[in-house]
Image (cartoon, rainbow, N blue to C red; front, side, top):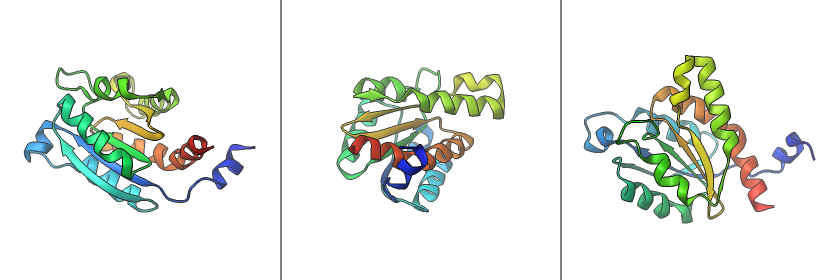
Length: 165
């Protein structure tokens, strides 16, 4: 079956959870522009059922993920994917993946490279599956949220269809 035909049989709408991982947004000293953007764009054709802001703390990131899993098909995180000491999102979530989806990060970094050049190597985007749900981890910048949302909107329902087959 072609990918277009397969996509045509995918769910038309998904339930999403959004987790912003940021010390400054959690403290209220910075605005959560990326989380708000994700909620707005994903709500255009899907349902955002839960949003939360947590600091860059392993235990709180894990709790946010596992608190959402029963209510959503996809979780999108924004923030904490860089290389500073406080950036622990990927190291926290990746060990919980039943399977990783390497193509997501590869495509994200390729498209990021086209936009910003070599600094794109720092883009720590990753995706994987936990308990039959897809988790997309995006960097915290608004541009990363915009780029990641394009990919997610294009492919998430198709990916969920594969998981259900």
